[in-house]
Structure formats: structure tokens, C-alpha cells
Image (cartoon, rainbow, N blue to C red; front, side, top):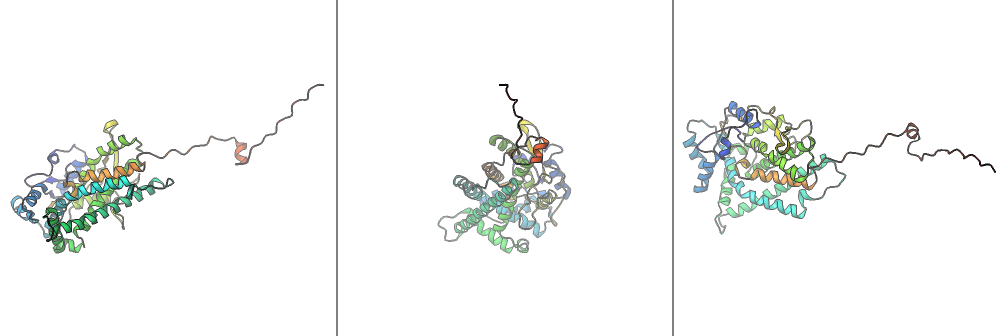
Length: 362
């Protein structure tokens, strides 16, 4: 699942070095990044340095060692640092999110609350997308408040995540890039997480619009086989992700994080048969794009946190199954054709005169 040329001393995941099949989304995505002249930063060694030293500026030392030949703009470096802060912190958030998901599922709250039976699938998808994102944002708010408490100087126990949250807040406040965009560590976390959640919803909606109708276990297994496509998309640069979402008509417009998927505009296609049946991303939305003068990128922070994208997808699949969206609606009964004279009479009662029986001889 590669989203570009892996650079640096190590890769985040050994699987990233596996060559993707020719003609696959991963291969085309990788080639587009190479054509744009951008490389993915090896995040793991930087995180290891941050873990060992607690230094939020470990990236500077790493770049001096691994990329001394590259001239990077200030914005490029700040974009890398912002994402690395989130990668570090999201390792703490993933467990909290998993617990919150189970709580909402067990209590029937948030996106697991009952919906009216008369509601169409389109309305269900819209409401569930919104409810899922609202629940996610509430957890992010509570998590960030907790991090600030854990990172306070008077906190009784030193917490590496709390300390890094304090450093991240200073970094985002002092970064010209993020100040121009009016972004904080919390707003960036919400933007990225909501987009990831919406892409998972687009996968589920695409399955529905493509007519997938399976029992829960088979439906979940089929969509689970499709998760590599979401992870591959998330591994790309910001410019490439946005360009693909635009081409697939999923890019945000107005206040919506990602536009809903329709049958006509779905970026997914059904491939394979039987136990290999899955949804793959179409290739026609891929094109080489770079943001400004960027030379290095990290990919979506969630891509580098083990199990994070799986957590988002699990939540969406659980919600969809809870509301029966693994099944197609029952077909509308078709009334048998009526004789012409019945149609002419409409819905009134049909009466026929019966001839009198012949009289019997006395």
C-alpha cells in the first residue's frame, strides 16, 4: 500500500516496500507522486527519536541526516512537523476512540440511535455521516482537554502525550503556515479525522449503490477486504488526496466534510468474485499534484498509527450494519395486470349480473 516514493532510512511499514500490481490504484498513485517530484518521509525513525528524547523538533535533526541534499521551504517543513505531532498524539487517541465507540454502541447513543423506518437510505446515510462526525468531534474535544490536563506543569505524573500536546500547541501557534490557515492542533485533528471517516462512509455508500446485498458477516468481510484502498489513499500527499477527492466529487463544498457518494459519481468499482469480491478505487481521478514547493510529505497522520484507519472503518461498518444498510430495500410489490373492464371501474366494487336459472317444470 504505497502512496509515493519512500524516502529516508526506514519505512513506516515493511509492506510499503512491496511492489503494487501493475494497473492497481496503489501503483498508479505511486507513479503520480513520483511524477510530481515528491517523496514520502520515513516517519518511523523520527517518531523513535521523539519517543526517546521527548524532543518535538527531532525532525530537524533527522532531515539534516537523511535529506541534507533537499532544499525544503519553511511551509514544507511546518507541514511535516504538524503531521508528526498528530501522528505522535493519535497513538493515544485511538484507544480512547475505540472505548467511546463501544460505549455508544452498547447504549444506543449517537449514530446507534434508532432511525424512523420510513426514512430512505439516502437520508439515513446523511444523518449517520453527521452523527458519526459529531460523536468523533466530541471525543476529540474531550481528549484534547484531557491531554492539556496531563501536560500541565502541575500534573502529578509526567505524561509524554501531555508534554507533546503542549509542544504541539506552541508549534501551531507559532507556525506561519497554520496561522494563515487559522488551524490549531485540534482543528487539524478534526479535519483529518472527519475526512477519513467520510471516505469510509463513501465505501459503504458505494457498496449500497452498486447493489451489494449480503448477510452481515459476508458484507463486513467484503468491505474489510476493501480497506487497503482507503489506506492507500491516506498514504498520499495532501495535494494528491485533495485532487483525488475533487475528481471523485467527494471534495468538501460548504460545511460538508465530504460529499455523499452516488451511483453515478462513485469512485469505487466492484471487482473479483466470491471470497475475493471487494471494492477498488478507480484510477481516473489520479493526477500528479504538489502543494506549493513541497518536496516531502508524510501522508495522513492516521495512516502511520497502527490500527487507526481500521478503527474508523470498524466504526462505520458497525453503524451501517446496525441500521441494516448491508441489505437492499425489499422490492415494491407489482400488482398483477387487471382486465380492461376492471381498470375502467377503478377501485370500486366489481359486480356482475348473474343470469336466472331456467325454471323447473312443475
